[in-house]
Image (cartoon, rainbow, N blue to C red; front, side):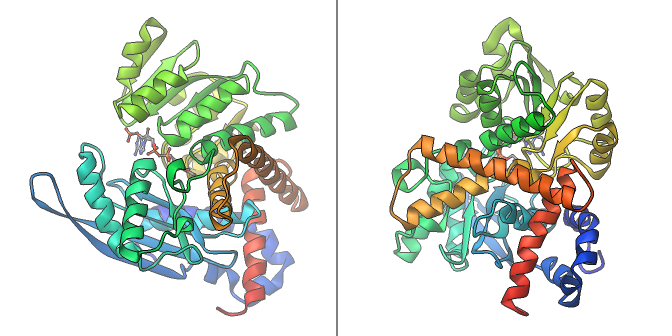
Length: 434
Ligand code: NDP
């Protein structure tokens, strides 16, 4: 805390991992001897830069850009870029730290990193967003590369922004280096199923958690928060797998649609029109209600998939979910449940899938995009989705195996942290003191 003052979210993420790995350190004294924990908590490199740009009225604006290259023991730094006014170093470091273990859990050759800016895309014209992305990449391009650091999207960074960022990278470097960024459009090196991967993967993860408990998603009532990339595709796959997703939310409030959300209408409103959620409820008619500013965790459910942002489920919200009979929670977002909320779930015996496992499908499919770019190949949607499903099953099983091995059966949080940590720690040991 003294070394990283004021970075509350980073402290929270580190504490959660350190609380899980005590038994691993006891069994492997070589980790402590070579100070793996101290080294893993210190980013290899942190880049902070000025992003000047001009708005549509000709006024000069200045934002701050970040890229934290946290750990490259397993492969090039890999992790998204977030554009949101709340972004500061503590958020980027928490996300980058989580990313190390998530990427390790996938079993693929990717290190951990994260970046972004305090730029708020909301209310900005497409030309302003383009100018911002161009200015951001004008600095970032010096630090990234297909063998070095490979960014992708996150909150506020979708297809449109990735296109502008890649366009500027190509322009300033004069290199068509497809593998430098993932989440690209299909027309210029993107991979099928990348857009859907985080949400779909999360739904598969829930399905696995329920299967272990001898049940399934069939007919289950599911609440999902968020209405962005992760939420919309989690809802879509939950419906494919037989569940009934009844809620979604954005920063204006939530929608309750008792008969099950209409995914096509939701995509039209949020992805095409970029409109607030009340528009969905108005068009859907009597079946759906919009609740402005409310907490959707009061809606009774059997499965919850928080997919908006960090710390969106507190202790009281977790209590509401437990009392309504919730069986399983899977984090579509990064760190949406607070430590107190996770304790409530654990004590109540609710299956809890942490983000570094449950939402790993996005980065895993990004790694497949890198693979296709390197081979100048393009897989079918079906092939990518089948691979995604296998990877999610493996991630799920790795969590349970590690939890069992260390005497914490069924504890996905401990299992994810232990399995993710061990692979990185072993690589760091093998690479020497670097
Ligand atoms: P999007 O920008 O597509 O969507 C974010 C959604 O969450 C929007 O509906 C947004 O509402 C809402 N939201 C964001 N911040 C807040 C806030 N502070 N309060 C209330 N609502 C908020 O982002 P993604 O779907 O890509 O990301 C969602 C989460 O999933 C993040 O935690 C991200 O780190 C995580 N994640 C994403 C991956 C990906 O592949 N995209 C991969 C793994 C994890 P509004 O539009 O009104 O702001």
